[in-house]
Length: 77
Image (cartoon, rainbow, N blue to C red; front, side, top):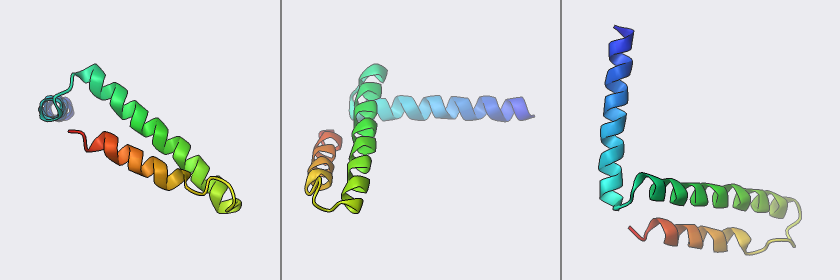
């Protein structure tokens, strides 16, 4: 029973992934590269925002600028 449920979940995940890739008109590796770029940008931006929280004079516009860039990357599709 457990192996059937896991197999079914994996099949659904693969089907959903293929549908998503088709919706955004990207290959698996194109999507992976873009998602990694966005994720890494978000992590780095988060660190800058934490530093800004401690020292408000640093990175005054970094967070808002990066959010706008991330929005542009995501809304292309």
